[in-house]
Length: 280
Length: 284
Image (cartoon, rainbow over all chains, first blue to last red; front, side, top):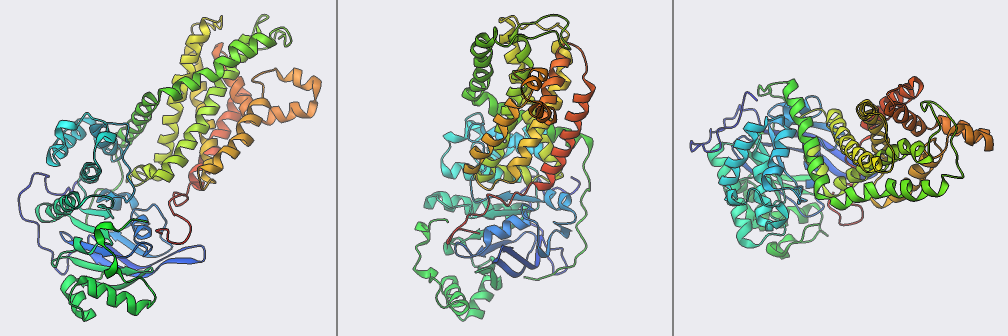
């Protein structure tokens, strides 16, 4: 890859996005249906490079469908998805080179060691074995699991597995990272660690992040926000802007107001305890 | 947040080098090998099945099913010797289906996502997966041959080498068939029924256990059916190759079927099957 992300141990500041910068991710007019059921309806938004964008929606909002489309697991039915300007349908190879993904379900091989899991991922990206070993060691050290490199993954805790999955997603040095409900099932400390780690990637390495969640406390005031509800984008923009436009005091209230307006019968998410929210 | 649909793409290298393709292939084969080593029971069961046929079934039917001199054999042979190639193909048949089962399982558990978000072409990734499954089946076959040697299944030494290309081709054909079948399966539970409609008919309606001239004596139409069965040709390809000979008809049939099944499997493979949870409340 000629255009790698900055080195993993880089401590330089992230490049500041400009208005004419190519979006890390652009989703424009995307629709998706499962038979007669419409899962996504004219979804459009963009993720800037070196930014943290939260994709907020309840279970069933269409977040996972959207992720499957962005990662080419599903074919785009209508609309356009681009990763740094590369259309995922027309030039998937170029687009996927720049993309790292952490899926909602665990996708690690439990019977393989940490290093073996990373080497397998590296091979899938065509990274030669020697280089892959060096990057794996570096990443494992970075996430504090270097001493367990040879252990089987099934011996790790849930939080450690997630950290490993994030490390794996970074192995080929992507410039856009997608995380689909990456903290589901983790305790409060592990969740905070994961969110902090990903935010660090944005500031230190300039990676664009799309963070799908249904937990309000994972969203910071400096983030960009996309509110997805029943397959539609209800709001998008910087968090303060979304809150202001919704005429609310905070993200919780803004989300409640937006979703109530969109579908009065929907569950009020404010009543949901984020820490106990179960994933569907 | 700006919403832009048309932007000049950030330059990145297009296409992949031969080295990247090879690295990917070796990585997938390596991982399949590791998984196989970790699943010792799978290895044992893969060996036990043909050995039971060889040690028990063949011993019991030795007197009933005498074999005349038929190519590639140049003399009378024991029934055990006759069915050995059939049992080798049986190992590959089961392995091919099991690999497909693993793909359905992986798809349901999400592991296939890791594979499919690789930037390399999807068709190539599936081919690599197929080749990895074939490599495992070839290892199983050689383990079987090693044990069978103590049971007087002793092909010419060169046969162990000449049979390798035949095993690779037949393994690919059976794996591709399994992949094609798994493409139409939405859930893991549906696979068991399909297995019964594929494995047993293919195995029994072939030349694995009895020569076709014997089948023809009993039922000509069944003999035609056996001849049309690609598994029969996989068995014959292996049988001839094990004795350093080439059965051109079988080679053509197995090669053609491999191409058709593989193209069909790649075109039919839809990762969205099994990813979407059905029913109200399921995350779409």
